[in-house]
Image (cartoon, rainbow, N blue to C red; front, side, top):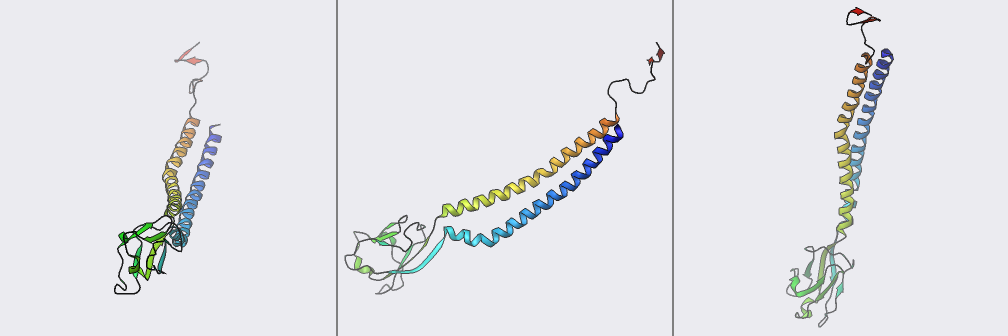
Length: 194
């Protein structure tokens, strides 16, 4: 009976070793393939949140205070907007954005009511637009999946150790007999016959 338990435990240990090898290979494969895939699509993911637009031209006529709507009429990222002169004495110089009323969400840019629009007869508008919340969500999902693979790899040795301890204990306990007064001849207890 103990011999059968030993054989079962040994075969279980062999299966465990083979299973752990397969699990480690799967973790390595998932990690490397996931990393390669992320490198291939990282620029596309970044493109969701950041798309640069340069040299978008507009002419404000004298008295024109109506808003100019950018080509992509939503989601201008603050601190990426620049307005340059394309003619006149200020050619190539960036204008002070405080002279404009800017709605970054709708992409509308109009000359403020306190500014003379004739000074902006020709301008080039440069900005970056996009929805960074989508980009951040995609990157957050990828990061959490890598963390899950890493955490699984961290706990794998503990799980294997627990199973090995259980198997070794079953082997040891299989060799011992509980109850039944093991080791004494029948009919004797404490060295005296009864």
